[in-house]
Amino acid sequence: MPINQKSKKIVILGAGFSGLYALKSIYRHVKNWPEFDISIVDKNNYFVFTPLLHEVATGGIDPADIVFPIRDLAKGQTEHVEAEVLSVDLLKKSVITSRGEISYDYLIAALGAGTNFFGVPGASENSFTLKNIKDATRLKNHLIHLFDEANGEKDPERQKDILRIIIIGGGATGVELGAEIHEFLKEINKEYPAISSDAVEFFLVEASEKLLSIFHQSFSEKVLKILESKGFKIIFKDPCAEVTEQGIVCASGKTIKSRTVIWTSGVSPSPIITTPDIPRQKGRIVVEPSLNLKDFPEVFVLGDQAAVADKKFGLLPTSAQVAAEEGNFVGKNIARLILGQPLKHFQYFHKGDLVSIGKWKALAQMGSGFLKFDGPVAWLIWRFNYLTKMPGTAKKIRLFFDWILYFASKRDISEI
Ligand SMILES: Cc1cc2nc3c(=O)[nH]c(=O)nc-3n(C[C@H](O)[C@H](O)[C@H](O)COP(=O)(O)OP(=O)(O)OC[C@H]3O[C@@H](n4cnc5c(N)ncnc54)[C@H](O)[C@@H]3O)c2cc1C
Image (cartoon, rainbow, N blue to C red):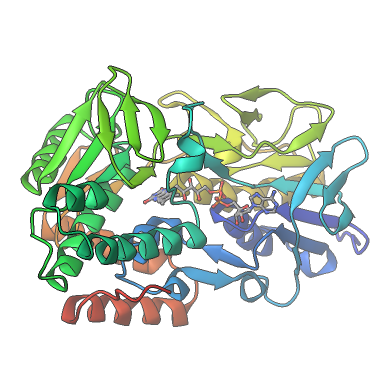
Protein backbone atom coordinates (compact mmCIF):
# COMPACT_ATOMS: atom_id res chain seq x y z
CA MET A 1 0.00 0.00 0.00
CA PRO A 2 1.66 3.30 -1.03
CA ILE A 3 1.75 5.80 1.76
CA ASN A 4 1.96 9.51 1.33
CA GLN A 5 3.89 10.54 4.42
CA LYS A 6 5.22 13.86 3.13
CA SER A 7 4.29 15.61 6.35
CA LYS A 8 5.66 12.82 8.62
CA LYS A 9 8.88 13.47 10.44
CA ILE A 10 11.59 11.08 11.67
CA VAL A 11 14.06 12.65 14.11
CA ILE A 12 17.32 10.99 15.21
CA LEU A 13 19.02 12.38 18.31
CA GLY A 14 22.78 11.76 18.20
CA ALA A 15 25.05 10.95 15.26
CA GLY A 16 27.27 8.43 17.03
CA PHE A 17 27.43 4.71 16.28
CA SER A 18 23.75 3.92 16.79
CA GLY A 19 22.48 7.17 15.22
CA LEU A 20 24.67 6.72 12.14
CA TYR A 21 23.63 3.09 11.60
CA ALA A 22 19.99 3.99 12.30
CA LEU A 23 20.06 6.57 9.53
CA LYS A 24 21.55 4.04 7.11
CA SER A 25 18.94 1.44 8.04
CA ILE A 26 16.11 3.93 7.52
CA TYR A 27 17.48 4.57 4.02
CA ARG A 28 17.55 0.80 3.52
CA HIS A 29 14.27 -0.32 5.05
CA VAL A 30 11.81 2.58 4.81
CA LYS A 31 11.05 2.10 1.13
CA ASN A 32 9.75 5.61 0.50
CA TRP A 33 12.14 7.41 2.87
CA PRO A 34 12.69 10.43 0.54
CA GLU A 35 9.03 11.29 1.17
CA PHE A 36 9.72 11.64 4.89
CA ASP A 37 11.20 14.64 6.57
CA ILE A 38 14.29 13.21 8.34
CA SER A 39 16.45 15.22 10.78
CA ILE A 40 19.52 14.20 12.74
CA VAL A 41 20.40 16.36 15.73
CA ASP A 42 23.90 16.42 17.21
CA LYS A 43 25.86 19.03 19.16
CA ASN A 44 28.79 18.40 16.79
CA ASN A 45 28.75 18.40 13.01
CA TYR A 46 30.77 15.18 12.82
CA PHE A 47 30.69 11.49 13.77
CA VAL A 48 33.62 10.26 15.90
CA PHE A 49 35.12 6.79 15.52
CA THR A 50 35.84 6.31 19.24
CA PRO A 51 37.80 3.01 19.07
CA LEU A 52 40.75 4.94 17.59
CA LEU A 53 40.71 7.92 19.95
CA HIS A 54 43.70 6.55 21.88
CA GLU A 55 45.82 6.74 18.72
CA VAL A 56 44.92 10.42 18.32
CA ALA A 57 45.82 11.04 21.99
CA THR A 58 49.26 9.53 21.40
CA GLY A 59 50.25 11.17 18.12
CA GLY A 60 49.81 8.02 15.99
CA ILE A 61 47.09 9.41 13.72
CA ASP A 62 45.52 12.75 12.93
CA PRO A 63 42.19 13.81 14.54
CA ALA A 64 40.72 14.31 11.04
CA ASP A 65 41.30 10.58 10.31
CA ILE A 66 38.61 9.47 12.73
CA VAL A 67 35.84 12.01 12.25
CA PHE A 68 33.26 12.13 9.49
CA PRO A 69 31.01 15.08 8.59
CA ILE A 70 27.35 14.36 9.41
CA ARG A 71 26.26 16.20 6.26
CA ASP A 72 28.16 13.65 4.16
CA LEU A 73 26.37 10.81 5.98
CA ALA A 74 23.04 12.51 5.46
CA LYS A 75 23.22 12.16 1.65
CA GLY A 76 22.00 15.76 1.29
CA GLN A 77 18.43 14.62 1.92
CA THR A 78 18.46 14.54 5.69
CA GLU A 79 18.72 17.74 7.64
CA HIS A 80 21.49 17.98 10.21
CA VAL A 81 20.61 20.26 13.11
CA GLU A 82 23.73 21.25 15.02
CA ALA A 83 22.24 21.76 18.47
CA GLU A 84 22.34 20.49 22.05
CA VAL A 85 19.37 18.31 22.92
CA LEU A 86 17.98 19.55 26.23
CA SER A 87 14.85 17.46 26.84
CA VAL A 88 12.11 15.46 25.17
CA ASP A 89 8.37 15.94 25.70
CA LEU A 90 6.96 12.53 24.86
CA LEU A 91 3.36 13.70 25.26
CA LYS A 92 3.75 16.62 22.84
CA LYS A 93 6.12 14.58 20.55
CA SER A 94 8.61 17.37 20.72
CA VAL A 95 12.37 17.69 21.30
CA ILE A 96 13.65 20.81 23.05
CA THR A 97 17.08 21.83 21.79
CA SER A 98 19.41 24.80 22.22
CA ARG A 99 18.11 25.94 18.80
CA GLY A 100 14.41 25.60 19.61
CA GLU A 101 11.74 22.92 19.44
CA ILE A 102 11.61 20.09 16.89
CA SER A 103 8.45 18.04 16.57
CA TYR A 104 8.49 14.40 15.46
CA ASP A 105 6.26 11.50 14.46
CA TYR A 106 8.98 8.89 15.01
CA LEU A 107 11.94 9.47 17.32
CA ILE A 108 15.25 7.63 17.68
CA ALA A 109 17.19 8.61 20.82
CA ALA A 110 20.88 7.71 20.47
CA LEU A 111 22.71 10.22 22.65
CA GLY A 112 25.31 7.83 24.08
CA ALA A 113 27.02 8.21 27.43
CA GLY A 114 29.54 10.33 29.29
CA THR A 115 32.06 9.32 31.96
CA ASN A 116 30.91 7.87 35.26
CA PHE A 117 33.22 9.04 38.06
CA PHE A 118 31.22 6.98 40.59
CA GLY A 119 31.04 10.01 42.89
CA VAL A 120 34.80 9.87 43.59
CA PRO A 121 35.74 13.28 45.04
CA GLY A 122 37.91 15.41 42.75
CA ALA A 123 37.77 12.89 39.89
CA SER A 124 35.86 15.02 37.39
CA GLU A 125 37.94 18.14 38.16
CA ASN A 126 41.40 16.55 38.28
CA SER A 127 41.32 13.68 35.75
CA PHE A 128 41.70 13.45 32.03
CA THR A 129 39.02 11.53 30.14
CA LEU A 130 38.90 10.11 26.62
CA LYS A 131 35.44 10.48 25.15
CA ASN A 132 35.90 12.82 22.20
CA ILE A 133 38.41 14.56 19.94
CA LYS A 134 38.85 17.47 22.34
CA ASP A 135 39.74 15.07 25.18
CA ALA A 136 42.24 13.26 22.94
CA THR A 137 43.94 16.50 21.82
CA ARG A 138 44.03 17.89 25.35
CA LEU A 139 45.63 14.70 26.67
CA LYS A 140 48.19 14.57 23.85
CA ASN A 141 49.26 18.19 24.44
CA HIS A 142 49.52 17.57 28.17
CA LEU A 143 51.70 14.45 27.72
CA ILE A 144 54.10 16.33 25.43
CA HIS A 145 54.18 19.33 27.74
CA LEU A 146 55.15 17.15 30.74
CA PHE A 147 58.55 16.49 29.14
CA ASP A 148 59.27 20.19 28.76
CA GLU A 149 58.49 20.70 32.41
CA ALA A 150 60.52 17.68 33.51
CA ASN A 151 63.43 18.85 31.35
CA GLY A 152 63.73 22.03 33.40
CA GLU A 153 63.84 20.00 36.64
CA LYS A 154 67.26 18.79 37.83
CA ASP A 155 66.12 16.60 40.76
CA PRO A 156 65.44 13.06 39.37
CA GLU A 157 62.76 12.37 42.02
CA ARG A 158 60.87 15.53 41.08
CA GLN A 159 61.22 14.59 37.43
CA LYS A 160 59.55 11.27 38.24
CA ASP A 161 56.72 13.05 40.07
CA ILE A 162 56.11 15.15 36.95
CA LEU A 163 56.18 12.21 34.58
CA ARG A 164 54.19 9.61 36.58
CA ILE A 165 51.06 8.44 34.73
CA ILE A 166 48.05 6.85 36.44
CA ILE A 167 45.33 5.11 34.46
CA ILE A 168 42.10 4.41 36.33
CA GLY A 169 40.29 1.37 34.91
CA GLY A 170 41.63 -1.90 33.50
CA GLY A 171 39.00 -2.34 30.80
CA ALA A 172 39.70 -2.18 27.07
CA THR A 173 40.08 1.62 26.97
CA GLY A 174 42.47 1.69 29.96
CA VAL A 175 44.63 -1.10 28.53
CA GLU A 176 44.75 0.23 24.95
CA LEU A 177 45.40 3.79 26.03
CA GLY A 178 47.95 2.80 28.69
CA ALA A 179 49.98 0.68 26.25
CA GLU A 180 49.87 3.37 23.58
CA ILE A 181 50.89 6.16 26.01
CA HIS A 182 53.77 3.96 27.14
CA GLU A 183 55.12 3.76 23.56
CA PHE A 184 54.44 7.44 22.91
CA LEU A 185 56.32 8.60 26.01
CA LYS A 186 59.25 6.26 25.34
CA GLU A 187 59.50 7.90 21.92
CA ILE A 188 59.31 11.45 23.29
CA ASN A 189 61.84 10.51 25.97
CA LYS A 190 64.47 9.98 23.24
CA GLU A 191 64.13 13.66 22.30
CA TYR A 192 65.08 14.66 25.85
CA PRO A 193 68.55 13.25 26.65
CA ALA A 194 68.54 14.99 30.05
CA ILE A 195 65.63 12.81 31.18
CA SER A 196 66.54 9.27 32.16
CA SER A 197 64.70 6.47 30.35
CA ASP A 198 63.29 5.14 33.63
CA ALA A 199 61.91 8.53 34.70
CA VAL A 200 58.39 7.76 33.41
CA GLU A 201 56.38 5.50 35.70
CA PHE A 202 53.03 3.89 34.89
CA PHE A 203 50.33 2.83 37.30
CA LEU A 204 47.08 1.14 36.37
CA VAL A 205 44.38 0.97 39.05
CA GLU A 206 41.65 -1.65 38.62
CA ALA A 207 38.92 -2.00 41.25
CA SER A 208 38.29 -5.71 40.54
CA GLU A 209 40.79 -8.59 40.60
CA LYS A 210 41.45 -8.81 36.85
CA LEU A 211 42.05 -6.77 33.71
CA LEU A 212 39.77 -6.96 30.66
CA SER A 213 36.91 -8.70 32.44
CA ILE A 214 35.04 -9.25 29.14
CA PHE A 215 37.89 -11.41 27.81
CA HIS A 216 38.69 -15.08 28.36
CA GLN A 217 40.65 -15.64 31.61
CA SER A 218 43.80 -16.67 29.72
CA PHE A 219 43.75 -13.30 27.91
CA SER A 220 43.31 -11.35 31.14
CA GLU A 221 46.44 -13.08 32.41
CA LYS A 222 48.28 -12.46 29.14
CA VAL A 223 47.54 -8.73 29.12
CA LEU A 224 48.69 -8.47 32.73
CA LYS A 225 52.04 -10.07 31.79
CA ILE A 226 52.47 -7.77 28.77
CA LEU A 227 51.77 -4.62 30.78
CA GLU A 228 54.03 -5.74 33.65
CA SER A 229 56.81 -6.43 31.15
CA LYS A 230 56.45 -2.82 30.00
CA GLY A 231 56.98 -1.71 33.61
CA PHE A 232 53.36 -0.99 34.59
CA LYS A 233 52.57 -1.29 38.28
CA ILE A 234 49.08 -2.74 38.46
CA ILE A 235 46.96 -2.18 41.56
CA PHE A 236 44.00 -4.55 41.99
CA LYS A 237 41.12 -4.36 44.46
CA ASP A 238 42.19 -1.02 45.91
CA PRO A 239 40.00 1.44 43.99
CA CYS A 240 40.75 5.11 43.57
CA ALA A 241 38.87 6.93 46.37
CA GLU A 242 39.94 10.52 45.63
CA VAL A 243 41.72 12.47 42.92
CA THR A 244 43.53 15.64 43.90
CA GLU A 245 45.78 18.09 42.02
CA GLN A 246 48.71 16.13 43.49
CA GLY A 247 47.58 12.59 42.54
CA ILE A 248 45.29 9.88 43.87
CA VAL A 249 44.28 8.37 47.19
CA CYS A 250 43.25 4.68 47.06
CA ALA A 251 40.58 3.14 49.28
CA SER A 252 43.33 1.64 51.49
CA GLY A 253 44.75 5.13 52.12
CA LYS A 254 47.72 4.56 49.78
CA THR A 255 48.64 7.76 47.90
CA ILE A 256 50.36 8.07 44.52
CA LYS A 257 51.68 11.40 43.32
CA SER A 258 50.83 12.28 39.72
CA ARG A 259 50.07 15.19 37.46
CA THR A 260 48.34 12.87 35.00
CA VAL A 261 45.38 10.85 36.19
CA ILE A 262 43.39 9.40 33.28
CA TRP A 263 39.90 8.16 34.12
CA THR A 264 38.77 5.42 31.74
CA SER A 265 36.38 3.39 33.88
CA GLY A 266 32.60 3.71 33.91
CA VAL A 267 29.96 5.08 31.58
CA SER A 268 27.17 7.43 32.54
CA PRO A 269 24.28 7.30 30.07
CA SER A 270 22.96 10.57 28.69
CA PRO A 271 20.77 12.06 31.43
CA ILE A 272 18.32 13.66 28.99
CA ILE A 273 15.09 14.48 30.82
CA THR A 274 11.79 13.29 29.43
CA THR A 275 8.22 14.32 30.17
CA PRO A 276 6.79 12.16 31.61
CA ASP A 277 9.69 10.47 33.35
CA ILE A 278 10.38 6.95 32.05
CA PRO A 279 11.86 3.87 33.77
CA ARG A 280 15.65 3.59 33.74
CA GLN A 281 18.09 0.89 34.80
CA LYS A 282 21.65 1.91 35.70
CA GLY A 283 20.74 5.29 34.20
CA ARG A 284 19.83 3.70 30.85
CA ILE A 285 16.30 3.96 29.44
CA VAL A 286 14.41 0.67 29.67
CA VAL A 287 13.13 -0.41 26.25
CA GLU A 288 10.98 -3.23 24.93
CA PRO A 289 12.66 -6.11 23.00
CA SER A 290 11.63 -4.19 19.87
CA LEU A 291 13.83 -1.29 21.16
CA ASN A 292 10.96 1.17 21.60
CA LEU A 293 9.21 2.49 24.70
CA LYS A 294 6.27 0.55 26.09
CA ASP A 295 3.94 3.56 26.38
CA PHE A 296 5.38 5.51 23.45
CA PRO A 297 5.92 2.98 20.63
CA GLU A 298 6.96 5.71 18.20
CA VAL A 299 10.07 6.35 20.34
CA PHE A 300 13.10 4.07 19.93
CA VAL A 301 16.17 4.24 22.18
CA LEU A 302 19.52 2.80 21.10
CA GLY A 303 23.17 2.36 22.08
CA ASP A 304 24.66 3.35 25.42
CA GLN A 305 21.45 5.18 26.33
CA ALA A 306 19.27 2.07 26.16
CA ALA A 307 18.84 -0.72 28.72
CA VAL A 308 18.18 -3.78 26.57
CA ALA A 309 17.57 -7.00 28.49
CA ASP A 310 19.63 -9.95 27.27
CA LYS A 311 19.77 -13.58 28.46
CA LYS A 312 23.56 -13.80 28.33
CA PHE A 313 24.67 -10.32 29.38
CA GLY A 314 21.78 -9.28 31.66
CA LEU A 315 21.82 -5.86 30.03
CA LEU A 316 23.54 -5.55 26.66
CA PRO A 317 27.01 -4.01 27.09
CA THR A 318 27.75 -0.40 26.17
CA SER A 319 29.79 -0.90 23.03
CA ALA A 320 30.04 0.31 19.45
CA GLN A 321 29.28 -3.24 18.35
CA VAL A 322 25.92 -3.29 20.18
CA ALA A 323 25.10 0.29 19.14
CA ALA A 324 25.80 -0.44 15.46
CA GLU A 325 23.71 -3.63 15.48
CA GLU A 326 20.79 -1.84 17.15
CA GLY A 327 21.05 1.01 14.65
CA ASN A 328 21.15 -1.48 11.79
CA PHE A 329 17.98 -3.10 13.09
CA VAL A 330 15.85 -0.07 13.96
CA GLY A 331 15.00 0.98 10.39
CA LYS A 332 13.22 -2.36 9.92
CA ASN A 333 10.93 -1.72 12.91
CA ILE A 334 10.22 1.87 11.95
CA ALA A 335 9.18 0.63 8.51
CA ARG A 336 6.89 -1.96 10.16
CA LEU A 337 5.41 0.65 12.49
CA ILE A 338 4.66 2.93 9.55
CA LEU A 339 2.93 0.06 7.73
CA GLY A 340 1.02 -0.99 10.87
CA GLN A 341 2.77 -4.38 11.04
CA PRO A 342 3.83 -6.13 14.29
CA LEU A 343 7.35 -5.18 15.41
CA LYS A 344 10.29 -7.61 15.42
CA HIS A 345 12.41 -8.33 18.52
CA PHE A 346 16.07 -7.31 18.45
CA GLN A 347 18.53 -10.22 18.74
CA TYR A 348 22.12 -9.31 19.51
CA PHE A 349 24.86 -11.39 17.91
CA HIS A 350 28.18 -10.91 19.69
CA LYS A 351 30.91 -11.22 17.05
CA GLY A 352 33.82 -11.04 19.48
CA ASP A 353 36.24 -8.65 21.16
CA LEU A 354 39.44 -6.95 20.09
CA VAL A 355 41.98 -4.99 22.07
CA SER A 356 45.36 -3.62 20.99
CA ILE A 357 48.31 -3.41 23.40
CA GLY A 358 50.70 -1.13 21.54
CA LYS A 359 52.44 -1.84 18.22
CA TRP A 360 52.11 -5.41 16.91
CA LYS A 361 50.39 -6.71 20.04
CA ALA A 362 46.67 -7.35 20.33
CA LEU A 363 44.16 -9.86 21.58
CA ALA A 364 41.20 -11.02 19.52
CA GLN A 365 38.50 -13.49 20.51
CA MET A 366 35.51 -14.58 18.48
CA GLY A 367 32.15 -14.98 20.22
CA SER A 368 32.81 -15.69 23.90
CA GLY A 369 36.32 -16.96 23.26
CA PHE A 370 35.95 -20.21 21.33
CA LEU A 371 38.51 -18.86 18.84
CA LYS A 372 41.36 -16.73 20.14
CA PHE A 373 44.36 -15.00 18.53
CA ASP A 374 47.08 -12.84 19.96
CA GLY A 375 50.25 -11.14 18.76
CA PRO A 376 50.70 -9.70 15.24
CA VAL A 377 47.81 -11.74 13.72
CA ALA A 378 45.34 -10.31 16.23
CA TRP A 379 46.84 -6.88 15.75
CA LEU A 380 46.35 -7.06 11.97
CA ILE A 381 42.76 -8.28 12.47
CA TRP A 382 42.25 -5.32 14.83
CA ARG A 383 43.53 -2.81 12.23
CA PHE A 384 41.66 -4.38 9.32
CA ASN A 385 38.40 -4.53 11.27
CA TYR A 386 38.52 -0.83 12.14
CA LEU A 387 39.61 0.17 8.66
CA THR A 388 36.55 -1.54 7.17
CA LYS A 389 34.24 0.04 9.77
CA MET A 390 35.44 3.61 9.17
CA PRO A 391 32.73 5.47 7.20
CA GLY A 392 33.69 6.85 3.78
CA THR A 393 36.27 5.63 1.26
CA ALA A 394 38.40 8.79 1.47
CA LYS A 395 38.67 8.42 5.25
CA LYS A 396 39.63 4.75 4.92
CA ILE A 397 42.43 5.66 2.49
CA ARG A 398 43.59 8.52 4.68
CA LEU A 399 43.68 6.33 7.77
CA PHE A 400 45.49 3.56 5.90
CA PHE A 401 48.26 5.93 4.76
CA ASP A 402 48.52 7.53 8.19
CA TRP A 403 49.03 4.06 9.66
CA ILE A 404 51.83 3.43 7.15
CA LEU A 405 53.46 6.72 8.18
CA TYR A 406 53.02 5.76 11.82
CA PHE A 407 55.25 2.71 11.16
CA ALA A 408 57.70 4.35 8.85
CA SER A 409 58.28 7.52 10.86
CA LYS A 410 58.02 8.98 14.34
CA ARG A 411 54.77 9.94 16.01
CA ASP A 412 53.75 13.56 15.87
CA ILE A 413 54.87 15.41 19.01
CA SER A 414 53.71 18.91 18.12
CA GLU A 415 51.68 20.51 20.88
CA ILE A 416 48.75 22.05 19.03
C1 LIG B 1 37.95 5.80 23.96
C2 LIG B 1 36.84 4.84 23.64
C3 LIG B 1 37.15 3.65 22.98
C4 LIG B 1 36.14 2.75 22.66
N1 LIG B 1 36.48 1.60 22.01
C5 LIG B 1 35.51 0.73 21.67
C6 LIG B 1 35.84 -0.45 20.94
O1 LIG B 1 37.00 -0.70 20.62
N2 LIG B 1 34.82 -1.29 20.61
C7 LIG B 1 33.53 -1.04 20.96
O2 LIG B 1 32.64 -1.84 20.63
N3 LIG B 1 33.18 0.07 21.66
C8 LIG B 1 34.14 0.96 22.01
N4 LIG B 1 33.81 2.09 22.72
C9 LIG B 1 32.41 2.30 23.13
C10 LIG B 1 31.62 2.94 22.02
O3 LIG B 1 32.25 4.10 21.55
C11 LIG B 1 30.22 3.29 22.51
O4 LIG B 1 29.64 2.20 23.16
C12 LIG B 1 29.37 3.71 21.31
O5 LIG B 1 29.91 4.88 20.73
C13 LIG B 1 27.93 3.98 21.75
O6 LIG B 1 27.22 4.44 20.66
P1 LIG B 1 26.03 5.47 20.85
O7 LIG B 1 25.45 5.70 19.52
O8 LIG B 1 25.16 5.03 21.95
O9 LIG B 1 26.75 6.79 21.39
P2 LIG B 1 27.90 7.66 20.75
O10 LIG B 1 28.60 6.94 19.68
O11 LIG B 1 28.69 8.18 21.90
O12 LIG B 1 27.10 8.86 20.08
C14 LIG B 1 26.36 9.79 20.81
C15 LIG B 1 26.21 11.04 19.96
O13 LIG B 1 25.29 11.91 20.62
C16 LIG B 1 25.81 13.23 20.62
N5 LIG B 1 25.25 13.87 21.81
C17 LIG B 1 25.36 13.45 23.10
N6 LIG B 1 24.65 14.24 23.91
C18 LIG B 1 24.08 15.19 23.12
C19 LIG B 1 23.19 16.27 23.38
N7 LIG B 1 22.73 16.55 24.60
N8 LIG B 1 22.80 17.02 22.33
C20 LIG B 1 23.23 16.74 21.06
N9 LIG B 1 24.05 15.73 20.77
C21 LIG B 1 24.45 14.96 21.79
C22 LIG B 1 27.31 13.07 20.66
O14 LIG B 1 27.95 14.21 20.11
C23 LIG B 1 27.51 11.82 19.80
O15 LIG B 1 27.70 12.13 18.44
C24 LIG B 1 34.80 3.02 23.03
C25 LIG B 1 34.49 4.22 23.68
C26 LIG B 1 35.49 5.11 23.98
C27 LIG B 1 35.14 6.40 24.68
